[in-house]
Amino acid sequence: MADWSRGHGAVDDVLDAENRHLAENLASKVSRLKSLAYDIDKEAEDQNMYLDGMDSNFLSATGLLTGSVKRFSSMVRSSRDNRKIMCFMSGGLVGIFFLLYYLVSRLQR
Image (cartoon, rainbow, N blue to C red; front, side):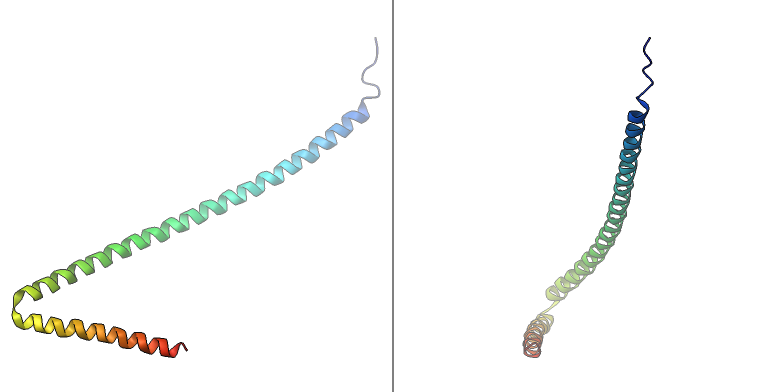
C-alpha cells in the first residue's frame, strides 16, 4: 500500500494556518458587528426615551391649551364688557408681537 501521509504534512500545515487566519478575521468582524448592534440598540433606547418625554410634554401642553380655550370661551360668552376687554387684550398682544418682531429684526442687522 502507498503511504499517503508522507508529503502531505506541509499542505496540511498551510491549510491549518490559513484556516486560523480566516477564523481570526471572522472573529474580528463578528466583534465589530456585535459592537455596532449594541450601539444601535443603545441609540434606539435613547430615542424611545426622548419620544416618551415629548409625548408627555405634548399631553401637558394640550391640557393647558384646552383649559385656556375653555376660560376664553366662557369669558367671551359672559358679557359685553368682557368682550371689549378681550378685544383690547387681543389687539395689545398682536401689537406686542409686531413690536418684538421689529426689535428682534433690528438687533440682528
